[in-house]
Length: 141
Image (tube, rainbow, N blue to C red; front, top):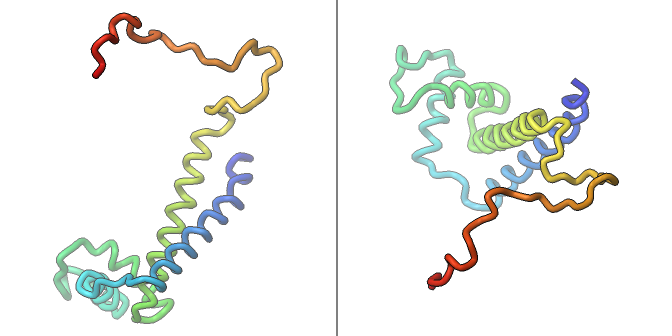
């Protein structure tokens, strides 16, 4: 549990970095492809208005992205900036989640062997098998 608590502030930094990076990239360069983005925004607006997917309207894709976007439409209104905020938030959350998962999987391990060991004769790691015999490498080119 202590490993999780120690990683939360760092994962918050990863979230902020992911959010800011995506938001900056989206507002600085051409972000929208109106045909694709309007599919999600239209569905989100309909869901935020109380309509139900597949009952009140049809859609070309599953309703998950529309449901997620509808929360942001309710919070920030139905405008292009809402889509940028949503993708930035999801990008930041995904980065923080991956950081936490990888951190928990690696808790207490030293995969790069960075800890100093006074008892070690060498830090060279012997691997087996050692490889092909040197005389078998005559015609490499």
